[in-house]
Amino acid sequence: MAQKFKDAFQKMAQNLPKGGAGGSGGGGGRGAGAAKAAGRAASALMVAGGMGYGAYNSVYTVDGGHRAVIFNRIIGMKDTVYGEGLN
Image (cartoon, rainbow, N blue to C red; front, side, top):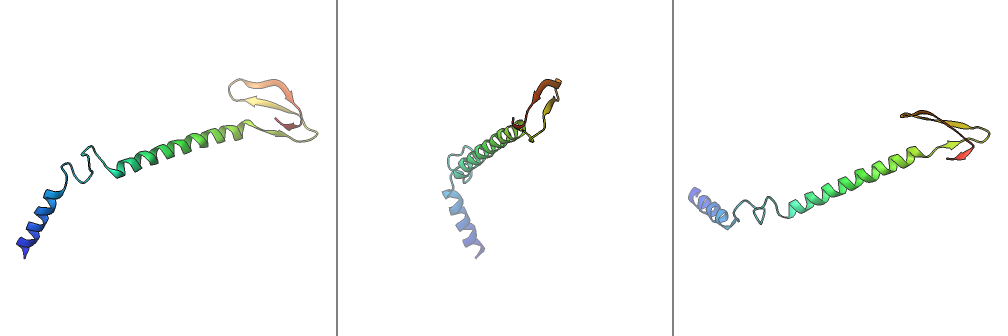
């Protein structure tokens, strides 16, 4: 009985391509393409998120009847005074 299992496994091992079950032997088959696509999607999502964050933080509103001055973390207070509305 054990000899039959051993022979069956040897036949299956002979049918597998060299370098594993990947296909071309270059480190992957169908799974490698999916991994590249997932990496690209994650990169695109991070870029889109960064752009959205920058756009959200670059727009501000000044309430009616108020005026605003801007403090820049790099150069300090700006000389311009902004009126009400979306700036």
